[in-house]
Length: 310
Image (cartoon, rainbow, N blue to C red; front, top):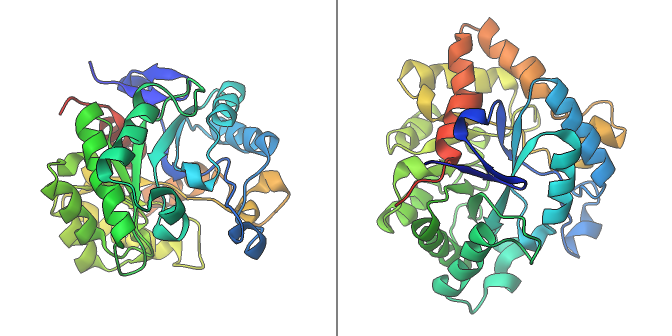
Protein backbone atom coordinates (compact mmCIF):
# COMPACT_ATOMS: atom_id res chain seq x y z
CA UNK A 1 0.00 0.00 0.00
CA UNK A 2 1.22 3.53 -0.80
CA UNK A 3 2.38 5.63 2.14
CA UNK A 4 3.59 9.13 2.93
CA UNK A 5 6.43 9.18 5.46
CA UNK A 6 6.12 11.99 8.02
CA UNK A 7 8.22 12.89 11.05
CA UNK A 8 5.61 11.23 13.28
CA UNK A 9 5.22 8.08 11.19
CA UNK A 10 3.62 6.85 8.01
CA UNK A 11 0.40 8.33 6.70
CA UNK A 12 -2.26 7.14 4.28
CA UNK A 13 -2.15 9.52 1.27
CA UNK A 14 -5.92 9.98 1.58
CA UNK A 15 -5.33 11.64 4.97
CA UNK A 16 -2.76 14.23 3.84
CA UNK A 17 -5.01 17.26 3.31
CA UNK A 18 -3.98 20.78 2.25
CA UNK A 19 -0.21 20.73 1.76
CA UNK A 20 2.60 23.21 1.13
CA UNK A 21 5.34 21.51 -0.88
CA UNK A 22 8.49 23.54 -0.12
CA UNK A 23 8.92 25.32 3.20
CA UNK A 24 11.48 25.76 5.97
CA UNK A 25 10.53 25.70 9.64
CA UNK A 26 13.90 25.37 11.38
CA UNK A 27 16.84 26.61 9.34
CA UNK A 28 20.38 27.42 10.54
CA UNK A 29 22.83 28.34 7.77
CA UNK A 30 26.51 27.84 8.68
CA UNK A 31 29.07 30.61 8.88
CA UNK A 32 29.90 32.82 7.14
CA UNK A 33 26.41 32.80 5.60
CA UNK A 34 24.58 33.29 8.90
CA UNK A 35 26.49 36.47 9.73
CA UNK A 36 26.22 37.82 6.21
CA UNK A 37 22.43 37.55 6.20
CA UNK A 38 20.96 37.14 9.70
CA UNK A 39 17.40 37.38 8.37
CA UNK A 40 17.99 34.11 6.50
CA UNK A 41 17.65 32.03 9.66
CA UNK A 42 14.70 30.37 11.42
CA UNK A 43 16.05 29.47 14.85
CA UNK A 44 13.07 29.55 17.22
CA UNK A 45 10.99 26.37 17.61
CA UNK A 46 8.38 28.31 19.61
CA UNK A 47 7.89 30.76 16.73
CA UNK A 48 7.62 27.80 14.34
CA UNK A 49 4.95 26.18 16.49
CA UNK A 50 2.96 29.45 16.50
CA UNK A 51 3.29 29.89 12.74
CA UNK A 52 2.41 26.29 11.93
CA UNK A 53 -0.55 26.40 14.34
CA UNK A 54 -1.88 29.44 12.44
CA UNK A 55 -1.39 27.46 9.22
CA UNK A 56 -3.54 24.70 10.67
CA UNK A 57 -6.23 27.20 11.69
CA UNK A 58 -6.24 28.43 8.09
CA UNK A 59 -7.08 24.89 6.97
CA UNK A 60 -3.57 23.53 6.44
CA UNK A 61 -2.75 19.92 7.14
CA UNK A 62 0.80 19.17 5.94
CA UNK A 63 4.12 20.87 5.17
CA UNK A 64 7.12 19.50 3.30
CA UNK A 65 10.16 20.84 5.19
CA UNK A 66 13.04 21.07 2.74
CA UNK A 67 15.97 21.90 5.06
CA UNK A 68 18.92 19.55 4.61
CA UNK A 69 21.73 18.58 6.97
CA UNK A 70 24.23 21.25 5.93
CA UNK A 71 21.65 23.97 6.69
CA UNK A 72 20.89 22.86 10.21
CA UNK A 73 18.11 20.31 9.77
CA UNK A 74 16.97 19.11 13.20
CA UNK A 75 14.60 16.14 13.03
CA UNK A 76 13.70 16.26 16.71
CA UNK A 77 12.67 19.91 16.44
CA UNK A 78 10.53 19.07 13.42
CA UNK A 79 8.84 16.27 15.34
CA UNK A 80 8.20 18.66 18.25
CA UNK A 81 6.63 21.23 15.90
CA UNK A 82 4.45 18.55 14.36
CA UNK A 83 3.32 17.17 17.71
CA UNK A 84 2.54 20.61 19.12
CA UNK A 85 0.65 21.89 16.07
CA UNK A 86 -1.01 18.72 14.82
CA UNK A 87 0.34 19.38 11.32
CA UNK A 88 1.97 16.59 9.32
CA UNK A 89 5.60 17.45 8.48
CA UNK A 90 7.57 15.63 5.81
CA UNK A 91 11.34 16.00 6.29
CA UNK A 92 13.95 15.98 3.54
CA UNK A 93 17.15 14.10 2.97
CA UNK A 94 19.66 15.09 0.30
CA UNK A 95 21.54 18.35 -0.17
CA UNK A 96 21.23 22.00 -1.15
CA UNK A 97 23.22 23.75 -3.90
CA UNK A 98 27.01 23.72 -4.13
CA UNK A 99 27.35 26.97 -2.19
CA UNK A 100 26.36 25.00 0.90
CA UNK A 101 26.91 21.32 0.14
CA UNK A 102 30.46 21.08 -1.21
CA UNK A 103 32.09 20.48 2.21
CA UNK A 104 29.61 17.64 2.75
CA UNK A 105 29.77 15.94 -0.64
CA UNK A 106 33.22 16.64 -2.08
CA UNK A 107 35.24 13.51 -2.77
CA UNK A 108 32.22 11.29 -2.06
CA UNK A 109 30.69 8.96 -4.61
CA UNK A 110 27.01 8.86 -5.56
CA UNK A 111 26.82 5.46 -3.90
CA UNK A 112 28.20 6.78 -0.60
CA UNK A 113 25.79 9.71 -0.59
CA UNK A 114 22.91 7.42 -1.50
CA UNK A 115 23.67 5.30 1.56
CA UNK A 116 23.20 8.38 3.76
CA UNK A 117 19.93 9.26 2.04
CA UNK A 118 18.59 5.72 2.29
CA UNK A 119 19.43 5.57 5.98
CA UNK A 120 17.60 8.88 6.56
CA UNK A 121 14.59 7.56 4.69
CA UNK A 122 14.37 4.09 6.16
CA UNK A 123 16.01 4.09 9.61
CA UNK A 124 16.05 7.69 10.79
CA UNK A 125 18.07 10.90 10.75
CA UNK A 126 20.99 11.11 13.20
CA UNK A 127 19.71 8.25 15.37
CA UNK A 128 16.59 10.28 16.15
CA UNK A 129 14.17 7.70 14.81
CA UNK A 130 12.64 10.49 12.69
CA UNK A 131 12.62 9.41 9.06
CA UNK A 132 12.74 11.61 5.98
CA UNK A 133 9.96 11.40 3.43
CA UNK A 134 11.39 13.15 0.38
CA UNK A 135 14.78 13.42 -1.38
CA UNK A 136 16.23 16.84 -2.24
CA UNK A 137 18.70 17.63 -5.03
CA UNK A 138 19.77 21.13 -6.06
CA UNK A 139 21.57 23.10 -8.73
CA UNK A 140 23.21 26.51 -9.02
CA UNK A 141 22.40 29.50 -11.21
CA UNK A 142 22.72 28.49 -14.87
CA UNK A 143 24.81 25.40 -14.07
CA UNK A 144 24.85 22.03 -12.38
CA UNK A 145 28.28 21.75 -10.76
CA UNK A 146 30.17 18.45 -10.46
CA UNK A 147 29.25 18.21 -6.76
CA UNK A 148 25.60 18.78 -7.63
CA UNK A 149 25.70 16.12 -10.35
CA UNK A 150 26.93 13.68 -7.73
CA UNK A 151 23.95 14.57 -5.52
CA UNK A 152 21.48 14.09 -8.37
CA UNK A 153 22.94 10.67 -9.14
CA UNK A 154 22.77 9.76 -5.46
CA UNK A 155 19.16 10.95 -5.31
CA UNK A 156 18.26 8.64 -8.19
CA UNK A 157 19.91 5.69 -6.43
CA UNK A 158 18.09 6.45 -3.18
CA UNK A 159 14.81 6.80 -5.03
CA UNK A 160 15.22 3.40 -6.67
CA UNK A 161 16.09 1.81 -3.33
CA UNK A 162 13.10 3.25 -1.46
CA UNK A 163 10.43 4.62 -3.79
CA UNK A 164 10.69 8.05 -2.14
CA UNK A 165 10.01 11.04 -4.44
CA UNK A 166 12.60 13.62 -5.50
CA UNK A 167 12.02 17.38 -5.03
CA UNK A 168 14.55 19.81 -6.46
CA UNK A 169 15.91 23.30 -5.93
CA UNK A 170 16.55 25.33 -9.06
CA UNK A 171 18.33 28.64 -8.66
CA UNK A 172 15.94 31.26 -10.03
CA UNK A 173 14.21 28.57 -12.07
CA UNK A 174 17.27 27.76 -14.22
CA UNK A 175 18.53 24.31 -15.26
CA UNK A 176 15.15 22.61 -14.91
CA UNK A 177 15.40 20.68 -18.18
CA UNK A 178 18.94 19.61 -17.32
CA UNK A 179 17.80 18.39 -13.88
CA UNK A 180 15.06 16.35 -15.52
CA UNK A 181 17.51 14.85 -18.00
CA UNK A 182 19.90 13.87 -15.21
CA UNK A 183 17.19 12.10 -13.24
CA UNK A 184 15.27 10.47 -16.07
CA UNK A 185 18.51 9.21 -17.67
CA UNK A 186 19.09 7.46 -14.33
CA UNK A 187 15.72 5.76 -14.64
CA UNK A 188 13.58 8.04 -12.47
CA UNK A 189 10.02 8.43 -13.74
CA UNK A 190 9.02 12.04 -14.40
CA UNK A 191 5.98 11.47 -12.18
CA UNK A 192 8.33 11.05 -9.20
CA UNK A 193 10.06 14.42 -9.77
CA UNK A 194 9.02 17.89 -8.54
CA UNK A 195 11.04 20.76 -10.02
CA UNK A 196 11.19 23.63 -7.56
CA UNK A 197 11.15 27.43 -7.76
CA UNK A 198 9.77 27.59 -11.29
CA UNK A 199 7.84 30.77 -10.53
CA UNK A 200 11.21 32.51 -10.41
CA UNK A 201 11.16 32.17 -14.21
CA UNK A 202 7.65 32.95 -15.41
CA UNK A 203 8.26 32.24 -19.08
CA UNK A 204 5.29 30.30 -20.46
CA UNK A 205 7.21 28.58 -23.26
CA UNK A 206 9.88 27.44 -20.80
CA UNK A 207 7.29 26.16 -18.34
CA UNK A 208 5.35 24.35 -21.06
CA UNK A 209 8.54 22.59 -22.17
CA UNK A 210 9.04 21.43 -18.57
CA UNK A 211 5.41 20.39 -18.18
CA UNK A 212 5.53 18.29 -21.35
CA UNK A 213 8.17 16.05 -19.76
CA UNK A 214 5.58 14.91 -17.20
CA UNK A 215 7.25 16.24 -14.03
CA UNK A 216 5.51 18.28 -11.34
CA UNK A 217 5.96 22.05 -11.40
CA UNK A 218 6.64 23.84 -8.14
CA UNK A 219 5.16 27.33 -7.84
CA UNK A 220 6.72 27.85 -4.44
CA UNK A 221 7.69 31.51 -4.21
CA UNK A 222 4.11 32.70 -3.71
CA UNK A 223 3.84 36.01 -1.88
CA UNK A 224 7.38 37.11 -2.77
CA UNK A 225 6.58 40.25 -4.72
CA UNK A 226 10.31 41.06 -5.04
CA UNK A 227 10.53 38.33 -7.66
CA UNK A 228 7.17 38.74 -9.40
CA UNK A 229 3.67 39.92 -8.54
CA UNK A 230 1.25 37.17 -7.63
CA UNK A 231 -1.00 38.41 -10.42
CA UNK A 232 1.64 37.18 -12.88
CA UNK A 233 1.85 33.82 -11.12
CA UNK A 234 -1.92 33.48 -11.39
CA UNK A 235 -1.85 34.35 -15.08
CA UNK A 236 0.78 31.70 -15.83
CA UNK A 237 -1.02 29.07 -13.73
CA UNK A 238 -4.24 29.78 -15.64
CA UNK A 239 -2.40 29.31 -18.94
CA UNK A 240 -0.86 26.02 -17.79
CA UNK A 241 -4.27 24.78 -16.67
CA UNK A 242 -5.75 25.75 -20.04
CA UNK A 243 -3.04 23.64 -21.69
CA UNK A 244 -4.04 20.63 -19.59
CA UNK A 245 -1.38 20.62 -16.86
CA UNK A 246 -3.47 21.14 -13.70
CA UNK A 247 -2.44 17.71 -12.41
CA UNK A 248 1.24 18.76 -12.36
CA UNK A 249 1.10 22.03 -10.41
CA UNK A 250 1.86 22.37 -6.67
CA UNK A 251 2.13 25.42 -4.44
CA UNK A 252 4.21 26.78 -1.56
CA UNK A 253 5.95 29.91 -0.28
CA UNK A 254 9.51 28.82 0.66
CA UNK A 255 9.41 31.28 3.58
CA UNK A 256 12.96 30.84 4.87
CA UNK A 257 13.39 34.35 6.30
CA UNK A 258 12.36 35.67 9.68
CA UNK A 259 10.87 38.72 7.98
CA UNK A 260 8.39 36.50 6.15
CA UNK A 261 6.86 35.26 9.43
CA UNK A 262 4.41 37.20 11.60
CA UNK A 263 5.50 34.83 14.38
CA UNK A 264 8.86 36.61 14.49
CA UNK A 265 7.11 39.94 15.00
CA UNK A 266 7.13 41.16 11.40
CA UNK A 267 3.78 42.62 10.38
CA UNK A 268 4.50 42.70 6.65
CA UNK A 269 5.46 39.07 6.04
CA UNK A 270 3.05 36.78 4.17
CA UNK A 271 3.32 33.99 6.74
CA UNK A 272 2.12 30.44 6.36
CA UNK A 273 -1.55 31.43 6.18
CA UNK A 274 -1.13 33.52 3.03
CA UNK A 275 -1.63 30.88 0.37
CA UNK A 276 -4.66 29.28 1.99
CA UNK A 277 -6.36 32.51 3.05
CA UNK A 278 -5.46 34.80 0.16
CA UNK A 279 -3.71 33.25 -2.85
CA UNK A 280 -6.06 30.27 -3.22
CA UNK A 281 -9.03 32.64 -3.01
CA UNK A 282 -7.52 34.82 -5.73
CA UNK A 283 -7.10 31.81 -8.01
CA UNK A 284 -10.80 31.07 -7.61
CA UNK A 285 -11.80 34.73 -8.04
CA UNK A 286 -9.79 34.78 -11.28
CA UNK A 287 -11.82 31.89 -12.65
CA UNK A 288 -10.22 28.60 -11.61
CA UNK A 289 -12.73 26.11 -10.16
CA UNK A 290 -12.28 25.29 -6.46
CA UNK A 291 -11.75 21.66 -7.45
CA UNK A 292 -8.75 22.68 -9.57
CA UNK A 293 -7.21 24.63 -6.70
CA UNK A 294 -7.75 21.58 -4.49
CA UNK A 295 -5.76 19.55 -7.01
CA UNK A 296 -2.81 21.93 -6.54
CA UNK A 297 -2.94 21.76 -2.74
CA UNK A 298 -4.35 18.32 -1.90
CA UNK A 299 -4.59 15.80 -4.73
CA UNK A 300 -1.27 16.43 -6.50
CA UNK A 301 0.78 16.51 -3.27
CA UNK A 302 -0.82 13.28 -2.04
CA UNK A 303 -0.06 11.52 -5.30
CA UNK A 304 3.51 12.82 -5.53
CA UNK A 305 4.49 12.23 -1.89
CA UNK A 306 3.21 8.67 -1.78
CA UNK A 307 6.09 6.22 -1.86
CA UNK A 308 5.76 3.67 -4.63
CA UNK A 309 7.83 0.63 -5.45
CA UNK A 310 10.22 1.16 -8.36
